Length: 207
Ligand SMILES: Nc1ncnc2c1ncn2[C@@H]1O[C@H](COP(=O)(O)OP(=O)(O)OP(=O)(O)O)[C@@H](O)[C@H]1O
Ligand SMILES: [Mg+2]
Image (cartoon, rainbow, N blue to C red; front, side, top):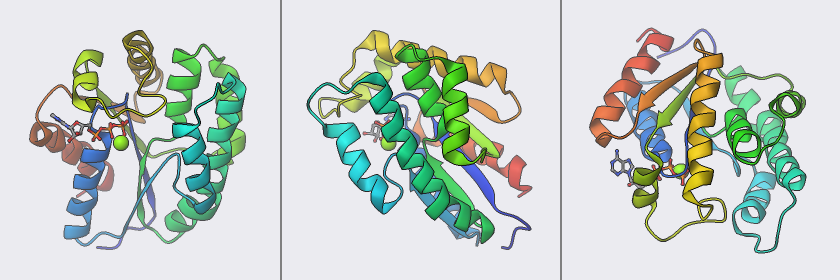
């Protein structure tokens, strides 16, 4: 199946909402219908990004808020330039697990950074590349925490209040950009959620 252009789809939501589970299902579904895809993630979608991801998720001393932001942005700049843009030029469907909205939700809404400033920084890092579609998996923070169990990384260890701010942040972003951002109720079974994912993506791709 050939598309006339590349499509850029990003998956967003708080830790444990089911992004990785759903993005893998979608990737398999698209490959099965003959589409060319690139499945990637942030942080860590490029070689440089893998080193940055290690720091971001496991560095065990305090990280200044702005330092955290710039580490994510460095990862993103490299990822867009070396991985995402070439795949879109190749007319692939790029599926990315987290992108600019994660910065707005975590470093902005949850940590209190200025949304306006973060929008500007995101634009600089990406050269203005926006997603065609962003799916936010909206989940009760308590349910997400239960799904994650006890093996948590540096950000997942932040408390329930932090994750509630992230959830509210994503819902706010979706309100501001209703055409690009679609919200799915992720408090349901994997199958029920995936059927909504297929519908939303199907509308974008006309399949
Ligand atoms: N709809 C669901 N119902 C119950 N459990 C689920 C559901 N979706 C995913 N899970 C399980 O919950 C856990 C978290 O899911 P997943 O890794 O897909 O979330 P995530 O959004 O990628 O999290 P993170 O932000 O930490 O990467 C996994 O163990 C997964 O198997
Ligand atoms: Mg994940």
